[in-house]
Length: 260
Image 1 (tube, helix red, strand yellow):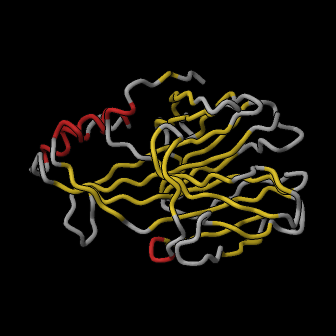
Image 2 (cartoon, rainbow, N blue to C red):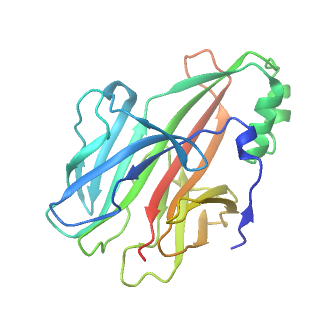
């Protein structure tokens, strides 16, 4: 699938959130730590554990799901022991709603262009919404893949409003160098959705590209051994809740690392 380089991400409001394990491969029963991050271009601040900001925070391996318990203000947000058995561990984090205000119409248009919301401008105008001083509600739907022991296993559908589902396992001995992921929204594949790809190499240099999902919501991404990846896909929809906002964004994220 074609990967297009992306330029200009710093010029718009587009802060990703993600889980960043301190080690993407750990021994069974070993220490497992992961930071909750927020920023741009796969770099940003480390957030503390605050239960009031969390809808769900789980560790899933196969059919076993264990809630993550943390202490208020803890950094890293996840500090525990890995399961005592080998397999693919899926970290799942869903945030509560937050909001932001657009004071300038141009910033919203730049964000919409960056995330490829082609009808956002016309939909906004048609709805009669103001072009400045309007609010957007947003929430995060984050997953991260950790290889425990041999790392063999499969990702799971968690039932979040939107999410990435890894169809291939980068830690598996059978991995062929192409990461296949499916983007879901309301349990259905998101066809022709933009996926933003942040690749960080062992030197810490980050390259940003985009690709699109096919009619089954699947993106196929060639990946490089030794690199860490953050995938991002965003849903924009009119806000239907009880807050003073017109738009809502749902941010799906997935992190993993390709072994060398």
